[in-house]
Amino acid sequence: MSAAVLETSARGSATERLADFARVTTDDVDEAAEQIGRIFCPHDLEPAKARAAAFSARHNCAAYDGFSINYVAYGGSVGIDPGCLERFFLVQIPLTGTAHIRAGVTELEAAPERTASLLSPTIPTRMMWCDCAQAILLLDRRMVEQRAAALSGRAAGTVEFDPVIDLQGQAGRALRHSLAELMTLAERLGPSGTLSPLAMADWRELLLDHLLNGQRHGLSDAIHTFSGRAERLPRALRVARDHLADNSGAPLDLAQLACASGIGIRALQLGFRRHFGLSISQMLLDMRLAGLHARLAQASPDASITDIAFDLGFTHLGRMAGAYREKFGETPSATLRRRMS
Image: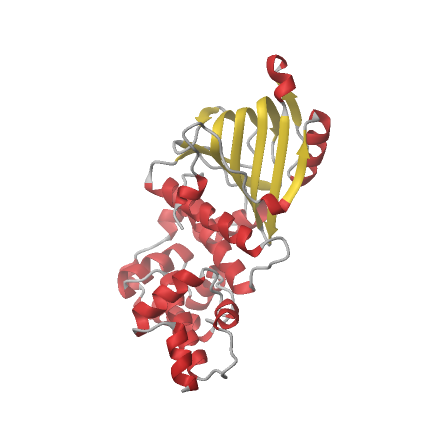
């Protein structure tokens, strides 16, 4: 799935996302401020007087462990003043309309396919949304700060990001693509569906990587320094690879993997790419594909490929099938049929 799922039409309208996860639907300003404030944080909400009659609010939210993906839309021009977010980081990707945002001393104009925003919990923020709908990723503050500490070799503390995300740059495009994937996955699973622990951990790792290695922040230089020289790490990398293989059925935990190998997370990431030619997630995918092949080769005739795949942490069956065919030269169903024949 490409990032096209977050694109707007030529007339500037956006298809409502996460419609089955509706939390707030109202034309009342006070109700919107109260209900959305319960989900995010208390904030002042004030429609522009000239367009107060056009006010509407919509908030859909799919929540997971440590993060949530949201669709928020306001009709009319609306001033939003949350102050400091305190408990979480927010990535806001515009789908339609514009949003003028002031985060600390930085001002930016967020617009579809051009500029998004990343709000840090300790930086006071004020916004003006103009007929704006945004895809919003919420990340738990403690989770982000603890990962930043592990990457930088420092004690956990405040992390503040550059609030401007360039959606036309490589890191911005990658982030936008991943949020599109996450939103589509949530819609496919629906409110009653769940992510497996493996899939949940994989998504947390991916989102943390996008933020801490893709967007400039106060610990970026410290993380770069703590990464070390990957050329000196082959033994540590072999230990990490063996640990990954021994625990491929468990959720990916980069902090635990780094602890087992005795090196920092960023050095581990660089070392995998340099010495094995694969990222950690790519190697884990290869291991899980091998596990899937082994399971299918021994499965009973009534086994469900889908159930086995989800159990191993795969969330996109089409991509899994393509990777499986590339690795083994046949589809998963062909492997299962050979077992039954």
